Image (tube, rainbow, N blue to C red):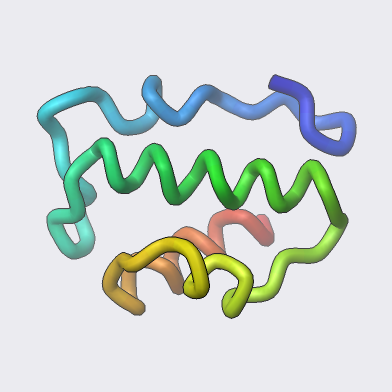
Length: 73
């Protein structure tokens, strides 16, 4: 997928089924939905605020902070 001129890996490749995040143990299905939603937000705007994600997705704050930091890099 191409987002703002950058190729990104599909979420299901990063988070295989039956796996969990290494930070808080969030199931892969939830991590995929979270990342897909964040990617969608980035397709709509150059900037995404944490509150936009927390309104729709419920994951531990530490996990979201890590995902947001990775999105900035």
